[in-house]
Length: 149
Image (cartoon, rainbow, N blue to C red; front, top):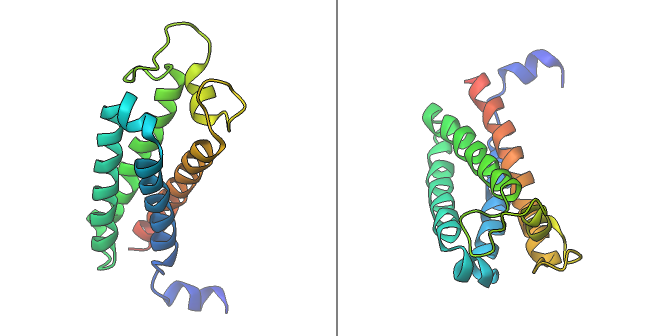
C-alpha cells in the first residue's frame, strides 16, 4: 500500500478502541481488586469510577468520529496520567497512606511491584502501569485521529 492510498483511507478507530478497552479493563480491575483504594483512598476510587464512565462515553462517541470525542480522549487521559504521577510524587496526599517524609512512599506503593514493603503488590503495580500505558496509547491514537479529521 503506497502513501497516497493510505491518505485516502479513513482513520481506523481500532487503536482507539483497543487501547481504550485495555485502559478500562485495568481501571475496572483496580476498582474491584484493590481494596486499599476503596478503604484508604476513597477520593481516588471515586475518581477512577468517573474516569471509567467518561472514557466509556467518549469511546462510544468516537465511533461516530466526533471531533469532540477525540479531544476528550486526549484531555481526560492526560489529566489521569498527570494526577497519578503527581499523586505518587507527592506521597499519596489524598489517602490515609500519606507521608510527609521525602521517602518516595507514593512511588514505592504504586510502582513497587511488591518489593517495596509498603503495601505494594505486583498485581496492583502491573494493573496501574498497564492503565497508564494504555491511556498514553489512547492519547496518541486520538491525536492521530484528530489530525486526520
